[in-house]
Length: 161
Image (cartoon, rainbow, N blue to C red; front, side):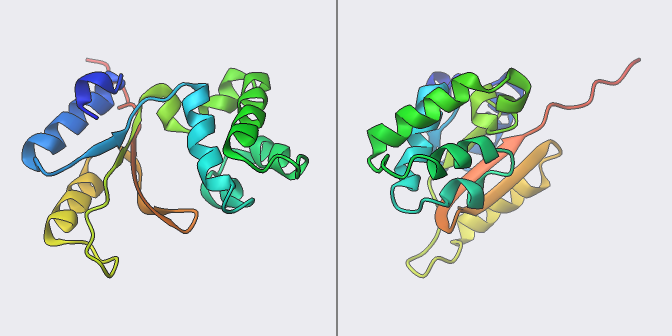
């Protein structure tokens, strides 16, 4: 996946480009997602762990509740459909809190770890750069107990001149 096809918000695009310029080994695996793509990404993990949403997303109680109330939805397509329908019913403000991927303000990166799950030297450099980035909102190498490198940025506060 390359930065041109990820449909990132300009702020995320600028930082992701800067990071990749400094560290060409960075591989982006996900950028902006529509509802279907977000639901699919979540459903792939929910099939293995029915509580994955509550363990991963701070503002997705409605989605976890939908999973809890539909125990017969067990396949990725079934859960994906359930999650899409639930997200379509959420108000835009509530939905915006679920995932920064929906606004193009988040990317996922291929993990830069050794076989023991430790950051490689390049991984340490990349993680450190992301962590020090002025507009980093959230960075993690684990989501819901799984190895997932996720980075989201906040919009910078506008300053008046």
